Length: 34
Image (cartoon, rainbow, N blue to C red; front, side, top):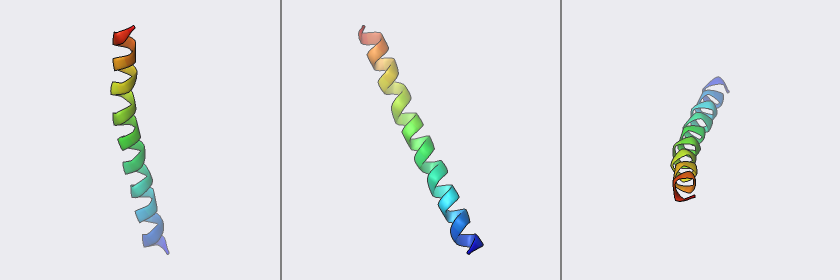
């Protein structure tokens, strides 16, 4: 049970970082194009 929860946390963190990394360049691009 604990191992499964740990895996979930790692997955969520990886997903959050992925979203963050993809989101920032998009915002920067939008800002630069204005």
